[in-house]
Length: 56
Image (spheres, rainbow, N blue to C red):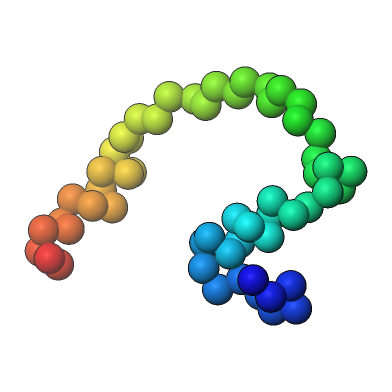
C-alpha cells in the first residue's frame, strides 16, 4: 500500500480506512429509526411502463 496514491482495490481502501486514528473517526452514535412511507403504484406510474414491452 502506498499512502501517496489513491487505493486501486477495495482491499486497499479498507486497509487505508483502518489506518484512520480514532480521534478523527466519527462518533458511533445510534442512528434514529426512520420509517419510509409505503410505496404504491398509481395510474401515472403504471402509465409510464404500460407500453414497455414494445421497446424491449
